[in-house]
Structures are given as C-alpha cells and as structure tokens.
Figure (cartoon, rainbow, N blue to C red):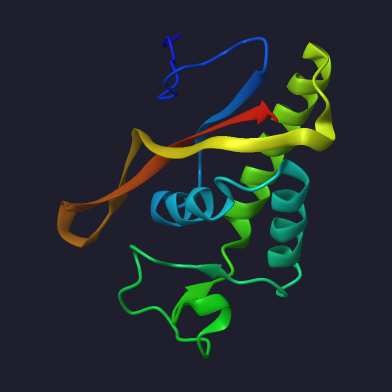
Length: 153
C-alpha cells in the first residue's frame, strides 16, 4: 500500500482535524474548483452550499478551468460555473469524515473552519478498447485525491 501524506503545512493536532478521499473516480478539474469554493468557509456553511449544488440552487463558480463553460448570468459575481454533482457528493463524504474526526478529537463542530481543501491527481487507470483490424484505442481514467483540514476558531 502507498504511504499518503498531506500537502498541509503547519498542522496543529490539538486544534485541527483532517480527512482525505483517495483514488476517487471524479473529474480533477471540477474537484479543484469545488475545493477552491469551500476553502475558508465554516464547515456547516460549506455543507449547506454543497447540498444546494445537489439541488441545483447554488452554482460552483469556475475560475480557472472555464473554457467552453456555460454562462449563467453572472451568478455570485462569476460569469461561468456549473453543478458538478459527482464531485460534490464525494467532497461531502470527505467533509462528513473530517467532522467525525473533529468530534472524536473533542473539537467544537460549530466553530470549525476549512483551512485546507485540495485536489491532487492520483494514479492513471489504463484500459484499452478493441477496434477494427486488430487495433486498440487507449481509454485512460485519471483518479483524484481530495484532502480537507479544519481548524477550531
């Protein structure tokens, strides 16, 4: 098994909790945008916003990976965005996990703020699709790692 670390600097185990989702079958680009959206928010607020994304009430602004994205009338100050449902479901699982880790450490859940949220590229799943005349086409899938850390303030 690989040894996974965190990209978090300055981790204080007395006031912080962390959790990660490894080898997730989601889009890395969308995961980066969702992590950027929730970073700096309170844990309860981030969970509410992501639940709103699942109901198509809240839009995730796409700030970096926005080429050929639909425009939504400048909702929340950004001209382009979307509803990445698969990514949001996985990020919600990681947020519930970090909340449980914080409770287990004895931290106050109402005072938790997300100080670190990052998406990293994982390994590549390599498959090949058979084609006509004995050829094949590569069919690769990029896996994603998501890290979340919260601090009690």
